[in-house]
Length: 175
Image (cartoon, rainbow, N blue to C red; front, side, top):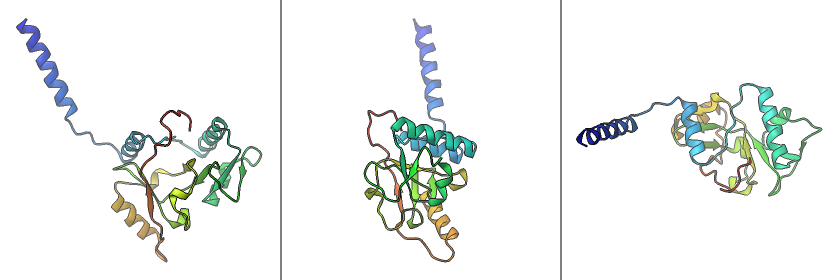
């Protein structure tokens, strides 16, 4: 009996040591971990063809046939025959935009007036899709704000906001 007791105590002690070890994640892994933990939905693509294919699947799964683009340079991601780019948005129209930065430490997405104009985030549709690249990853909000300042040499953008909560409907597994 003592043998089993000692064996289980050793195993429990080793498990606790493993749980208490610090894990150093890369910026992209840290962002994805924190983003998904907040119930954000994430698709990692290796190239433009995968981006286009995944967008088609997301739009098909949700029955969307139009999109409102906050960043008009993203129009190349859509086939004009399958998805209509609409000049106005409403509560049901999905929105696609770029962002300033992805904040790895907390899984937030940082925007400014460069993406949002003068519209507040809460005034947009719940169906919000963000296109970003790994070059937009930063460790924390401070680095994100520094990046905005560095990238905006002529005029600093206004309306700097972050999406911090991604929970829309806990019962919905679709995008």
